[in-house]
Image (cartoon, rainbow, N blue to C red; front, side):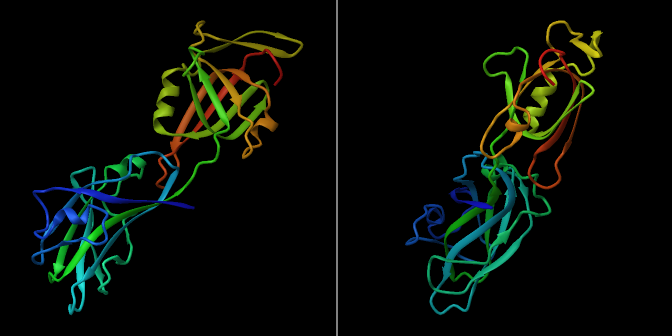
Length: 284
């Protein structure tokens, strides 16, 4: 499991603490924002995540940093995630207990917030946050971090080419099954929603036919007659996969059926099953 750490780096001037609100988003541990009274809210409306997909997301944490003022018994705030710029999540109460300005509160785990989306890196990039002073106004916040726990993807080991078979017309994905039986092939893979949509737009499932049989071996064809239901499967021989060793040759197939379903959990991946007929040329 890997982690990526970001921080909220902008705020809404119309919804901000009275004392130095810009110091909550400047990543400087020597400066901080201060609330004037309980109930003051500062909306943090941007963070440093650029949306790059680093892998499957498993946990999302918000971690405030700050301190209590000298002599104060504690400093309590509420953290409230804001999803997609307009949907308030749950309130999470946390407190600072020391005078050191870089002290963190307990982690605020928002992974299973009642309003949380199916987590993606775009959702991380678009995440905002309310910081509310809830009892007393004798503390300071200098930074609010955003920590994402994720599993980096393995090297993708299958490439699916579709018509027209030229540069850019392919999908790289992960292969969990490649079975050949009775001159048919079954591929199971997982990919993101955009890739599933693109694949479906470039095939006509069921548009297959059998021309003839020679010595017990059938010869299939694409009934669209213009390769609109033809896929070229290529195994990528990388160090983290045995697919290239198990299926070292490429396969030209005509799609019989395709089905897909979401993978359980917050990853956003979609499991995809492709059934097809092998063209009849080359090895099985």
